[in-house]
Length: 281
Image 1 (tube, rainbow, N blue to C red):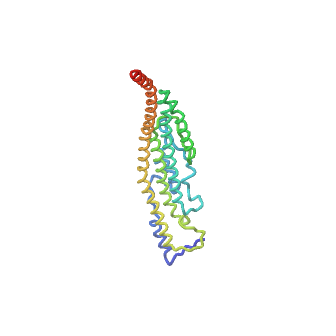
Image 2 (cartoon, rainbow, N blue to C red):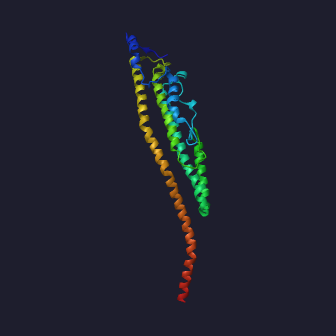
Image 3 (spheres, rainbow, N blue to C red):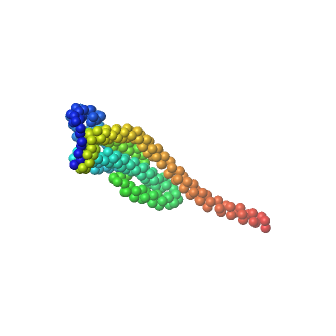
């Protein structure tokens, strides 16, 4: 067991100052709930709005919410709780954006295959197999994602509203969970390994707790700073992917036109050559 060395009257001083040293900045709410119950209350009342779905708002990535953002008070003490939480959040956000990116690309290809090139038999015979191959590649990449990515049945490639809702919901949960982690930081075993035989002074322990709280505050600030940047990057991708693919389609259409034009003009050119040869004779 780790020994916490405390000198003189520090115990009484710590008891008196404890409420201020380890106070959290968790948002106040009209509830008596604390700890993980407070976190669940906040998610239910302040985040759930972004999870609602209807026929116009589809789910992109299906996340198993029981596997992350857990009640750490009921788990084995973990001194890397903040690092693990950040890892879970980034994994979820990467999954949502990865799924959305693949989905937008897949739907664009599907629209081209089923709506556009059907009207041009020559172009269809030239491109259909290529589109099928690319769509299968995307499906394989989707299967490799950590969570369940849903392509949906719509051919419209715009899913930015669903992406905004899901990333907002995930970030809302994450923010409240970081506030919960501040409360968890009061747990000595979450800061130091209490199974170690090494002694630690109360000053060092207090410094570790303060450092952990500062890290959590920094992560909250970083989350709010990076959220709009990440979403804008995806928004730009979705706005431009269709024009990029359509330009490729136009390029193939031009090739088909050029081949057809060549077949049409070639006999005419042959006639000109024959007339010219006949005139020389």
